[in-house]
Length: 261
Image (cartoon, rainbow, N blue to C red; front, side, top):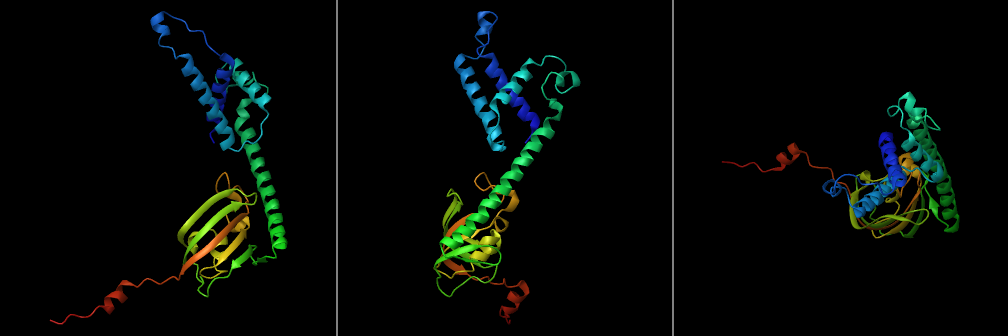
C-alpha cells in the first residue's frame, strides 16, 4: 500500500466531511460551470466508498473512528508550511513524518496476530475433526475422512493427472472455491492436494482437512484464505491418468520405416 495515497484520500474525505455545501461565487456564467449538488453528493459518496475500501483491502481491521476523524480534521486545519516539512508536522498530535513507520508497524502486528490465531484455530479444528469423525491422518498433518475408497486405479506419481469434482471451504464454513470435471496435474496444486489425491482410487470420495503449511502458508491466497489458513476440501475423484513419459524426437524418428527407393 502507498501511504501517501492513503493520506491523500483521507484528507480528501475530510474535505467532504468538513466543507459540506461550498459557497459558489462568480457570475452566473461562471457559477453554471460548478458541479451540481447531485454531482457533489455522488462524488462524496464514492470518495467515502474509496476510502472505506482502502481500509478494508489493506486489512486495517477495527479502527478508532473518532481518532480517524480527528486526524482528517487536523490535516484540514494545517495551514502552515508545506506537507511533511517541520512546520507542517508540528501542527499535529503525532508527527506525520513517521506515518509509514506507524502504519506499517500496525499492519505487521495485525498480520502476525491473525496468522498465529489462524494457526491455533486450525490445529484445534483438525484435532476435533479427527476425534469426532474417527478420521485418519498422514505423517505430514493432513486429516482425512474417506467416504468411498474407489477402485484400485490410483495416482502414484506427482506428475499424474486427475479429474475431480470438488468444494473448498474454510474452517468456519465459507466456500472459497468449487469445480466440476476439473482436470489438473498433481504437481500443479498445493501440496495437500498432491498428497491427498493418492489416498483414494478412481471413483472415490474423500474429505481433506489440510494444514496451512501444506496449503498457502503464511502468505495466504485471498481475503477468504488468510495467513496460516487450514482448508477443507470435499473431493470426488472421477478419473486418474498416469503420467506418460514423452517420446524423445530421436526415438520417434527411429521408429519410422525407412523408405527404399
